[in-house]
Image (cartoon, rainbow, N blue to C red; front, top):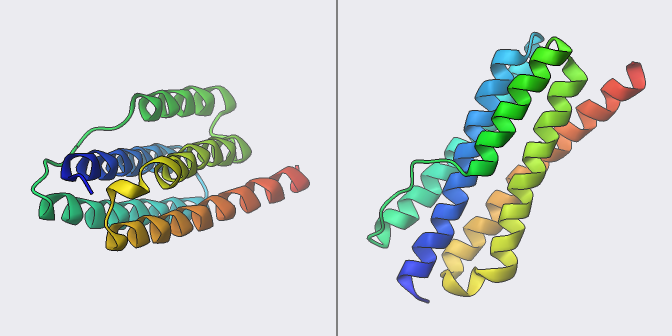
Length: 153
């Protein structure tokens, strides 16, 4: 395991969790219904938990924490803001946007699993796997709500 590669890999996951947090803060502002606000607050909590675990690992390796977000996350939030404005905070549109963001998060974790796991310790690999399961569970909740919304339209 090369420490710099491990730090870079973990920071990549920090960035996607920062994106999720900021994306769900945007969604929280757009949502009118309490069930969505509760859901998005829970998803923010998931990302903050993941970020804390990742930060602790990075610091234990002597690394510097990344505080930013990915460019794709900024574009996602801009698109969500624009779409919400055009659709008047439409519930289905908000859920669809959130699912797209979840797809990006899942893809980022899967990319790490496919390409970067050799750079991580067994403990860090287990943490990545656990976090991916949590994010997939959030994705499935958003997808289910979005699909239910499609049926009731």
